[in-house]
Image 1 (cartoon, rainbow, N blue to C red):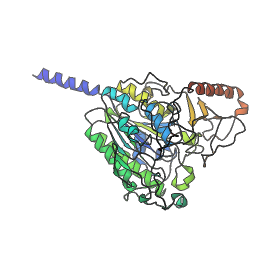
Image 2 (image 1 turned 90 degrees about the vertical axis):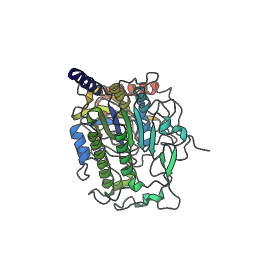
Image 3 (image 1 turned 45 degrees about the horizontal axis):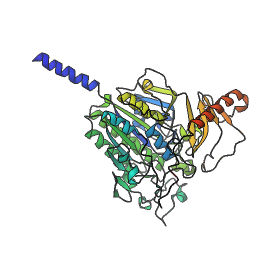
Image 4 (image 1 turned 90 degrees about the horizontal axis):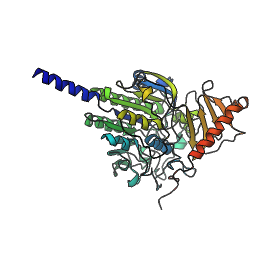
Length: 461
């Protein structure tokens, strides 16, 4: 009897150790590279994220595939540059409430990949990949969805105060009723307008509830906060508490939410079986001054292909899978799909062109990052390329009014290892590197020539 009991315990421990890891992605909106304490911010208190970085991996050269919302999110979930699936556009840069399109159903998301291994999947928060029923998360591999379908400044109520008029006032606080943004449960609108004062708290609580309900099986939770995108909202507990003003209040509430999630994972005893990723969709919205974030030492911000627009603060945490340390190699949200697939023992799509790399070796401390290059797209145009330390710009956007093209006298070359701020153009000193990177640009453009049609331009008639 004692031998049988010992065998059962042994079998149970083997089964537990063989469990596929859970994945939690916490995705912010318009968070800057320099907005977290662990990335150098001196006035915004982010103790839980700082602890997460200390216990996990802080990635200092991690990129999103586009510097604005919709295409960046499409890239994270599909592992493909948004040009390939028509999710970047020169006509309309993101989806709006009158948009007719969405992420094509032919695209394969992380949720659908993990379904091969019977993962439970949930999306909480901002979606912004199509708000019509056929484009919602429940049609893209997610078992459930609870959140707002697009940006929190959309559906502006006519005749109400324009938040741009108060952007310079650090005490400005818009009325949540000025934005008729819907809150959805699946395909059903359950609250309109959504009370954005409590939205961060409620997204966090939904995430906590989901983790508790699915702690006994592998799960994928995609938590996409709608903040710190303008307009800024914080609950009463956090409002007026940060030295950084309202923007800091918002981030300190998000930091609290991260702590709640990590505490829940520990309380459920699944910390050794869970990987949590914290990052953001693009850089800070600089036009709104103190209501926008900081890119720290990086140049420019949201909407641009400078580093401040696409290099984002990123943390991986997972005591059973992530070796603590600072990672200065390149990575991207494009890499999450193949990395999760490898760790879960699932098959990443092999019937289409993919742009991500498996980073599991870096996470587990057994290898270097396979990513040594990156292409910077926005508005369906290739603006720059990075290879090793070198970055070549061939097109640029204005740093503040990024809807405008910035004039250039010719290609600009920067060494990002010695010049993180892209302050010194060295193209004239390195013509051979300019020539090599120009060839990379042309090859990548040729490789994306068979992309799907523009999905963002069509409007509801």
